[in-house]
Image (cartoon, rainbow, N blue to C red; front, side, top):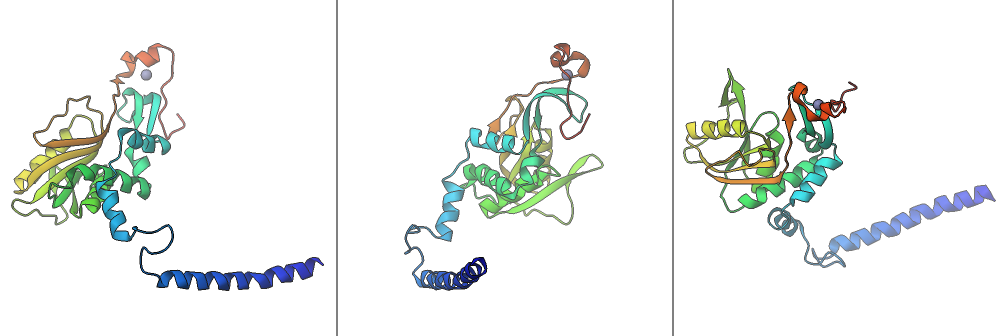
Length: 244
Ligand code: ZN
């Protein structure tokens, strides 16, 4: 009884599969977009819609950070030794290409009409951001690195005279790194047409002469341990990603 049922089940499997294959063949012979539920949708239309009509809200941006553990609120000991009520680690978000792509498209959207040719970011944190923003804009992505303390283009990267550049970062805290990249671009004859970051934690203090976009702003206080009000209240700072 059981073996017979089992055999029957096996023999009906290929039959169902064959019918499914025939349906797939029929579907692929239909004109693109003519099938039920896909009218008006094709690859090109979808790409354009993703790039120009789906700006990411601040809430959506922060939700992606929180979902990946890239944004925590509490009492933290930062790598710098300072204590903070916010832990921010973009790499935890950008390790997921789907998130990196969505954030890149969101940051690219306000610059769609800026005729950006090249997107630049300071290594290491900005590299993936520049890459995804550049993908959405159909531009090149370069990164700068410090050499003897000076932000430079290395690895054979070059800029043409008058090349229209967008400078991006994952997080702007003081704006210092971004300003160094802007200066580097100008020294190579490029023109900076905008500055963008996924997150702005400068509290409004990082100001630039060009169009400036951040997908989200967060306020994060930092304190020397001896002056930390969270420690004073009896809480113990934790270092995310470690057991101490
Ligand atoms: Zn503390």
